[in-house]
Length: 486
Image (tube, rainbow, N blue to C red):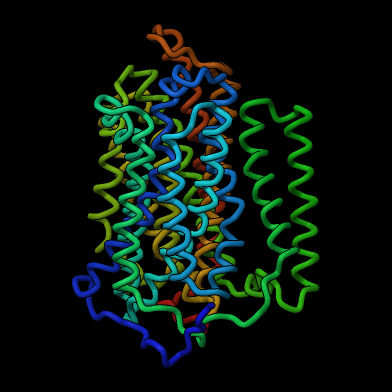
């Protein structure tokens, strides 16, 4: 029997400092970290998995692609479900599934089974990602604390994404590859306990009473899933291949049907009128731009460090530490910008830093690691500023009973940006250097050709990110808080 939680069953628990909220905040960060690190954790183990399971190259790509596809495609649906049935409740279900499914890797005996397992893990992760960020807002009333907590969440998530290969490479030196997933189970258990005891249960008054928009959910899954698949297919099979063109057309048709349905529905999954609010529209667009920058640089530098420089996965992972350190150290500067000049100007400064760092990276790739590290620092400042301000503003601009949908929209924008960034740099490198990069030691000619391809790719990304992130920032208001949408 299901018990309905009413507004008087349990009071909403609010904290007055980050220290006071240490247990629930750490639990939410841990949940966010484990689903983000799973995006990249297995990438370093693919050669080992291929040998153990006899996998083809295409099958190995699907081991990582299946997770991203289901994760990105279900974000909006998971956010919509959480706003109706309870955010903490859905997160606990997601954590339980994530931990349990991770243990099933011990029974995997074929590549197909592993791909299916990774797809299922993506479903569970989609139930976690938007809700962890939404629940951060429930912990605090103070908007400054919300921004600081969101900063911490973003840094932790980015650290998981960046450090996945490093952690995986280090672990593989001591354990079998299956343990890279098995470890998710105890982490999910610890996070679940912290959330259960530290985060207040959902109040009925804070949830929407609208029925679940099933057709809208199906169409959103089809739209986002096909769009993400189109980017992957374009890089792998060519942008004029039948498979890629079919998936692009399918994404466009599904997207048009989704918009048509949502406009006609009495209880839409995503209220499209929200995009008439500058904060919502601008924040989502700027998030796409920031994710294009991050994904493009991450993809390019992985190739740069491990192939052109010939570094080990561990050393290549450590080379990304300046990005994580800057995300932490830049917090006071970004907060000061928001307080002093408002969201629009602060976000424009962040967008300028992103575009400038990409332009600098086009020069730095031919001038050694120190030059690259300087650009990474500038980029991390831009990422921290744009991502945090836009995430806080977007979620706070949503109605109180749709905060999970707000974070789902935020995460979906980032997922779309990640797909675009990877597709742009992957396509340019393939066209300008080689469709298949050799894994052995590179000669001077190939290294020079690769550096030239990187220079053009980063220059293109600089223009693209500057236009998208800057355009999104212009749609924000000059508010010095996040109150403009209420």
